[in-house]
Amino acid sequence: MTPWVEFVVAALIVIGTVFALVGSIGLVKLPDVMTRLHSPTKATTLGVGALLVASIISFYHWKGKLAINELLITLFLFLTAPVAAQFLARAYLHLHCDSAGDLPATNRPCQWSTFQCACPPDAEDGSAAKP
Image 1 (spheres, rainbow, N blue to C red):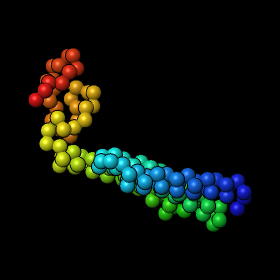
Image 2 (image 1 turned 90 degrees about the horizontal axis):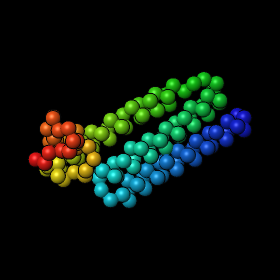
Image 3 (image 1 turned 60 degrees about the horizontal axis):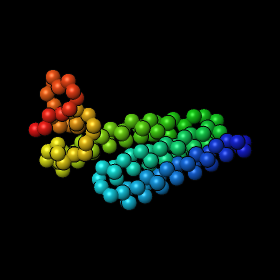
C-alpha cells in the first residue's frame, strides 16, 4: 500500500475512534434522556461510518476490489440510525410528557408535531393559543 493511502486510512481510523469515544462519553455523562439520545446517534454514527470507509479503502488497495459488505453496512447505518432515534424520541415524549406544557418551547406557533396542534388555524399573529 502506498504511504498516502496508509495516511488516509490511519486518519479515518483516528477520526472514527474519536467520534465513537465522544459519543460513548456523551451517552454516559449527559443529564437527561433526550440529550443522551443525541450523542450516540450522531457522534457514534459518524465514528462507525469513518471506520467503515477506512475499511473500504484499505481492502480496496489490498485485494484490488471493492468491499461491498462494508458499503452496505455504511448505507444501512446511515439510513436506520436517524429513524431509530426519531422513534425513540417520540416514544419518550408520549410516555413522559402528559401535556404540551411539559415540553420545552419550540418558538413555533404549533409547538411539537407529535402532539395535537393547539393553535387555531386562522391565527395570523403566529401566537399559539393556550389549551
